[in-house]
Length: 209
Image 1: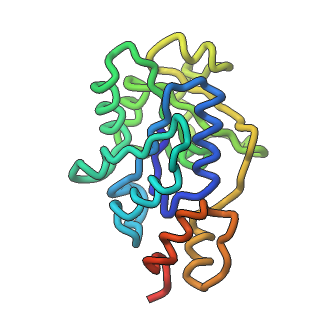
Image 2: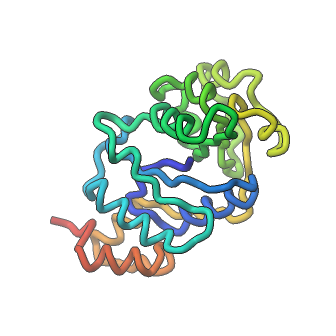
Image 3: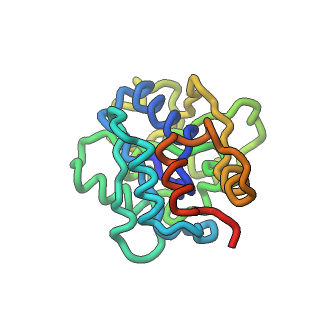
């Protein structure tokens, strides 16, 4: 599972999903747009529109799935609830993984039911070069004894571990910067899949109003 607002989905999101799929030999990567992100303001583009953009971005990429399950629930989009849904779907012995970026990882102790995340899945943190600062105390307590050094060790159990993973391609693309560029009429070429850019422009998403 790779969740996010995908506001909008960009090549950094998609390349990370492809590399996660390869690096961990996953059956599939569920890319799950958040309907109501609990820790940030509501996106200006609707959940249904963001899901449509995600589907366009994925296209026919093997192993990637645009998963609408958070749009089908009411209330905040808690990752623990999404993982519980995936666990029910795949069964108790499936090896489930939730991937997240380093910035989101640093706030993990503030998430809804963070301990439950490890009961349902492994966590894979997409490492970012140069991030060697000490972890917040609450986060250190949450992950104590859970970290493993390799995908092979991670996959020995259905859930409960943490792996830091450096992906081969580190695309420093910011959705915030993309929205600002679109609002001011500047180019976003080579930051978004062509089909996503075309849909955004056809519907005037992210334009200043």
